[in-house]
Length: 138
Image (cartoon, rainbow, N blue to C red; front, side, top):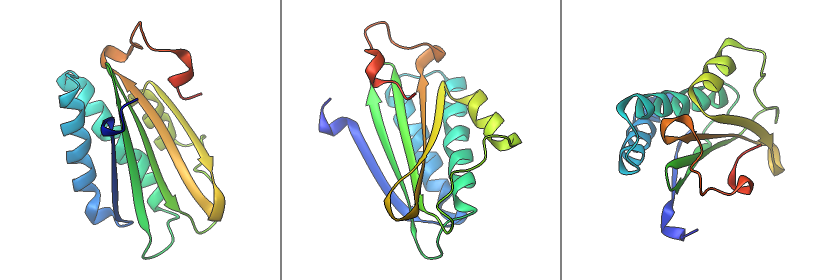
């Protein structure tokens, strides 16, 4: 993967800045020739993932987002330092919506109570035929 195909943003962990993230998501998806419906799904999915994480974000911390651009696909990892270090519950309506909008969704915890939601979206909701399974989020 070419390092130029990874875009990283760091924003204050405050919902007032989610507009910037939504705009960046839509712009990058358009660059990959996603359909308007897929762009909107991805934009809403990234917004939903961010909202799930902001609920437990450490005050005055950063919301970090890394977009990996692949042929016909985008992977997104959204992270915050969390007060409790727990990933969001997968038994909520929000997680169900997120799962319906993205091709794949997962969550993880890292060092220092960092919580990450990773998602992938393929153009047309199908993996590129040349994509190796190891690039998918499990």
